[in-house]
Image (cartoon, one colour):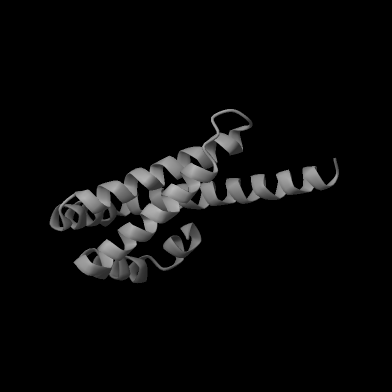
Length: 120
């Protein structure tokens, strides 16, 4: 997603703007995000282990928190906050870079753990 954000900024911004202004779609996104956050927290709430383990736990909790905020904050406030945060070009690229780095780190950590468990 981070690469897509960097390569297709205008298209991503158009899609996010349209989504943020569609209250029923935002409700559906919030519900699915809630399911994803709950699944991660219930399935992987580990605060000890390697850095990858803790990062996955933090991603789960932040996903759950984001979902709860999106479901309980009034739709107009949520869309204004989302659009204001992404309209800054600097914030947009920082978020894209962080998304890319987090995804790359977790992908590497997942494959490294899989590789290590097969050879142990």
